[in-house]
Image (cartoon, rainbow, N blue to C red; front, side, top):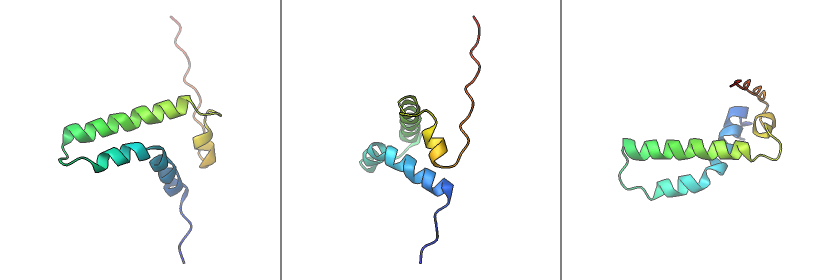
Length: 78
């Protein structure tokens, strides 16, 4: 019998599904180094940023997994 996954594990799974195309590209990497890991981290960050901007309901990823949606940062006058 398997235990019920935690909310962080469910969040990790949701994020992994969103990054499936990047994971697929990572499978083709023959030699891992700091440059490859850095590129994957930047691509993952960018993908997450774009996903957040295009959500049908802003904050839904947080809400769906039981996390508080962070308040928007105040805009700077200027």
